[in-house]
Length: 602
Image 1 (cartoon, rainbow, N blue to C red):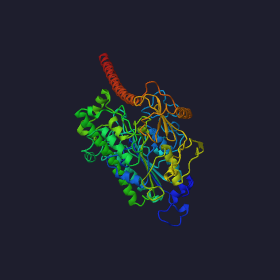
Image 2 (image 1 turned 60 degrees about the vertical axis):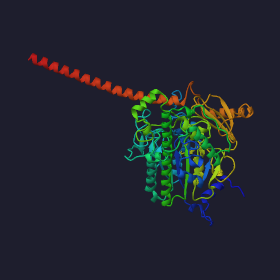
Image 3 (image 1 turned 45 degrees about the vertical axis):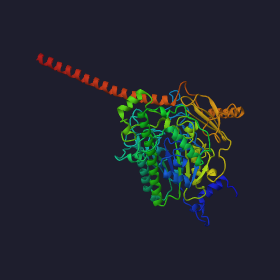
Image 4 (image 1 turned 180 degrees about the vertical axis):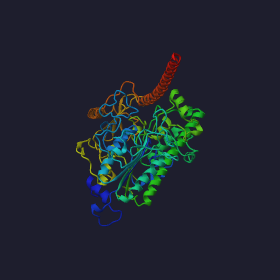
């Protein structure tokens, strides 16, 4: 069989009829709708079709109707990934060399460290909008909150978005201690959430409303749905939590092992691939009865939160089927980074503060008014069988599930698993090629912009072996955790607390769990890839981290600085009010004294 070139394959994907018939002229073919489903903090095996034990039937249906990518990489935290997804440009060039909550003060504002999406890049919404698409976004944005950086200023016709990293899932409430308010806006104006709000339900319903409002236009749409699930705080409807009441009592180590077996059976990882137990994973056997009860409950809530999100995806799919739009819609599902290991209760100060803000009782975990997180134990299961998790440059932090489906186009082999290296910057050029939307070519509205650095995955969608990146180097850095991918190999360094700052070399094809360091066995490859990494770091303006820096510590510092500002403002208001009151008293006393003197003089 003759192998199609990239452009020819894109044409085939766009034009191929479902039934044998004379091909229609290109102009008569309706361009596909695009739906991007972005989950928050879902680990590599957090979908049923990738090894999860909880129910994700709607995502699984999309997975088996299309292609799963088992070697797909993002950044180790949310906004850098989101910026790369939106632009197809590496994070140090789009402004997210680090995000506001984790950037050290010494880096803030340096080139590439804007902490917001800069104005030197073009978004996917701007490209598709210019090509005649209606463009919509709902949910988490986290790429800037000023008037020039909210979604509607970056190409989205309609947007209901959250500017922060996360918020409560049941009410309009921020993550207490991290933000003052939950910064929701609609089309650039402050917005109020409904009384019956639940995050996954709301962001899907709002997207359905947007799509329906413009159906009469006849235009195709680009819909970006950005879930809060499963970001901290872990919260789910009671019925979804109850569904998993009998599960998770054997602990995270057993779950990590079970998921690894399922992932291998599904063809997601090689059978028998070795894996490690992370040093930060607590010993389940040494947890007290109270600690185990709380841990079981939070994982039940996590599973319920995932299932609730999946159900809403199913509701969107059903709506698109009912309105005749499903067959010609390309669905892309991914997570913004690996599983979240942060323990918000790791310090007494944090615990005391959160205890004053929330009901932290075990019975309330996952419910309205609660605040909980899965921590490093369950995060190790979410990343299974990989090593590491969110914030790290280990595979558990960077490798996440990717599903690409176009139901009405049969060129994508149903149920296929592609193990070739793919990257989040590849999504934009893939979608523009499939939809026949022109790239900006490094120039937009008369000014030079950052060129797209990702590569179209269209050849891989068509069944081409290997990766579109071939043997070319692909660099990465965030918060001092760094990696260089080249072919099947990865050079990586992780700083404390997940690493020791030493560079290591792994063969990801045979050892995706990063268990065997090859740096001593293959010194020539190690040295060549170190040279590649230095070239990447120089070209992208990567800065060294200050001594002693960790992302966890920086987030805590950020949170307490925010609280300090709030306390200072309150103290200032109190002090200012006291001064005003005292001044009024003195002024009144002096006025009365002058009046008495005047009266006595008469």
